[in-house]
Length: 373
Image 1 (cartoon, rainbow, N blue to C red):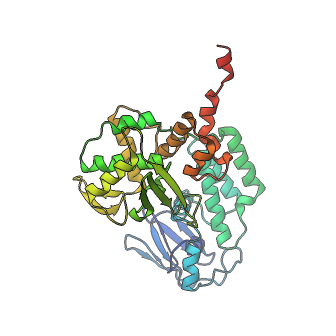
Image 2: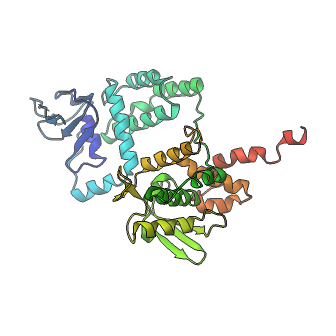
Image 3: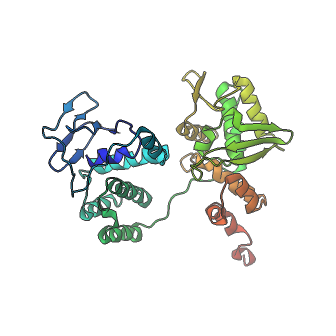
């Protein structure tokens, strides 16, 4: 029931819950606790019925109590309009992340509501298996689940805070960053591309992604109407991004290229080749290389980048789709572009947000060692 109530805050108009795995579930109607160790769909009905995805059905024999767990009241049914707006208060990526993190918590044998001791033990078991950032993210999901159903948040307890602090001191908090794809790396990939449909698409996609310093979510979301071609290049409007969930939008100028690889020419060539006049710019391909009507996925962008890197003999492991974004920032800084002009492209509001991308460049700028050796 606790998981069921939390999912009401996410996106199900019928207040159902879906998670992945093999269904093995038990319901304790007296305590109102759902033990989920697999795939199930939970309907928030008075009988606390559970319908598993393999068509098995488990129904609680006792009616659902008026209060659950520690005495809090279940969230009342909301009007359809309110539910829809509550759903949109979180991005799809955030909702998907919460589900995945709570599913992992459930498969470890834990339930919600949880005690501080249970959460602390869960964190300790993850040391050496998961990155600190992963455990911090799962802790946020557990916290959100408890707050959403109106009970005390165990993650705020001193025991949990101290456990997390100990993990940071023991493991360290440094995160592996994707290697920047520099301009010469990009050109090495593009020089190998031919004239097949996938080559034409990938050339435009990689160049535009690099020129916009785009996150993969921003790149795949581009529509034809978002691009205004001008005599100097193109004005591209990015309507929604990781740091702009309310779709204020920003415009990015992509000038005509001065090298053998012009992003504007590549984009126009792809649109003409594929006959795209409206809708998504970058379309998925079928297994035979045919162009579909479906928008390409973010995962396909990552796979494409890694495959193209491997084609030219690079070790693709250190790279990710984010390498396009960090690559433009790094390459532009190395070429002498000011941080202000770089932020006009990336959308960073402050210098602090851009600093992690520029740190490696700054280290070599008038390095102290260079004055000695």
